[in-house]
Image (cartoon, rainbow, N blue to C red; front, side, top):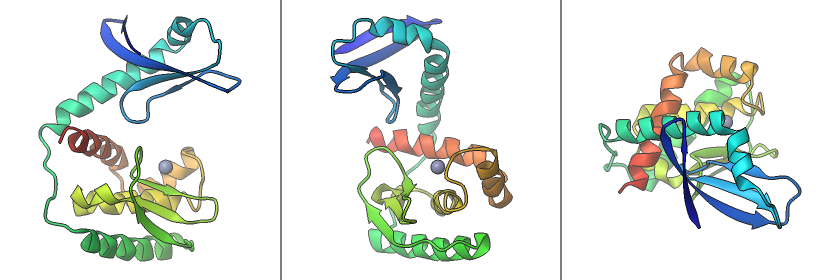
Length: 185
Ligand SMILES: [Zn+2]
């Protein structure tokens, strides 16, 4: 059930799902706030109150991104074959430069991210990347390759990333904008 609330003047919609888990958590993977709570959990409002700053920041960032996405255009000229070429080229280039050896590279349908890097060093990329500008596809590759050096998004990770993409913050924003642009089609 979709519920609405106001946090510091910002309208926030959320869904609650009950699962067999120990601790409640908040998810905002695809732009919609989801409260995942243990079965029998009594007070979801309290969860929102406790994390209202985090929620407010995230939701405002999403609203800004949706607004920015209106000024962007999808690349409709690249097929999956061309995407694969670009991905493999970039994987080779960046893994050489960062001195890492990825295992398998797979293109797949992914629901909530552009790419991922498994503990077995397998790289997965979202098929929807074909709609993004070259530059942004390369950034996604570099981001995942950097995870072969540093698992978490910690300081060290962003240091590796910024050595190749000084404007990585911009790129992360662009990725969010394209995400919403595709969702809105
Ligand atoms: Zn990452």
